[in-house]
Length: 156
Length: 184
Image (cartoon, rainbow over all chains, first blue to last red; front, top):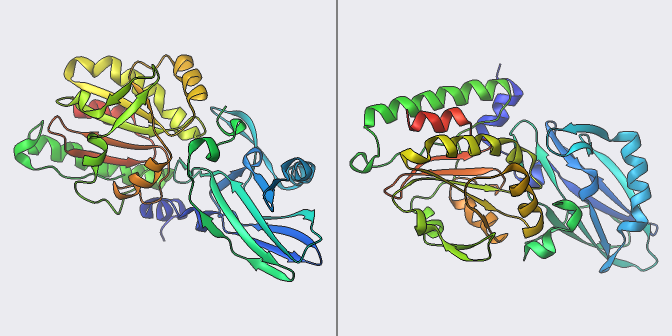
């Protein structure tokens, strides 16, 4: 039997959307994310960014993310970054209430593969949601510049 | 891990010696993969794509545009990295050591940071990096996908011979011992 780590290693890193499959839902005015984390991978809590209809809603979501991290996150003693909170398992996160029938959610996340010994660059994903949407996959946005791609806290 | 073969006529070492080194590296890759999955054969490499890299110029930390051709004739190890990448930061002290020990034998490390200037400057100073650090645009994360790094992840390292041909491609960390083996 081929060990999981070896199997993963021999095939190289997974595409980022397979390592971290993300979908969004917009039901009854509630906007929510479903975030997948493939075993052997992790996402940094502090590297999420959220925009709804172009507005940065990170500050509004931050307390929810903090609570979620307390419940489902893990403190990783990173050799270079020190104690860092990461998500190693899938989770769901309710975002903010939205009163319109259509909304656009933009998400930035960044993670690494423990089994492959690599990190993915920050990924930006956009969800075009109409009321009633469930588990909708994103459309990808290509990064245009480092200034836009990396907020200061990502690479300090 | 990936190893890309060079024409024998342009090798900086004998083909037998190279085969031994590459074979050893392949065995090490299998062993490391079985233990922790750090190494694997890279896929999707396109021959000649590295020419884009070797003819490019990058902004150095001193603000000057620096052509990669500056190091033609050296055994060049080009390391794509970022301060936001833990594995990248972990391998770099070994690069500093290798640069110090093998510079006289023609080794030249060059780090291309896919990152912002400020954190790169801080980290380079903190680690006392003894080789050039250049600043690369995020577009290079796309470009490396055709150089043996199909997912555009970091760290990613190319070992390039004095004849400007790729000797080794590595997605994931490169060890000091592997660099030392080139000059053994």
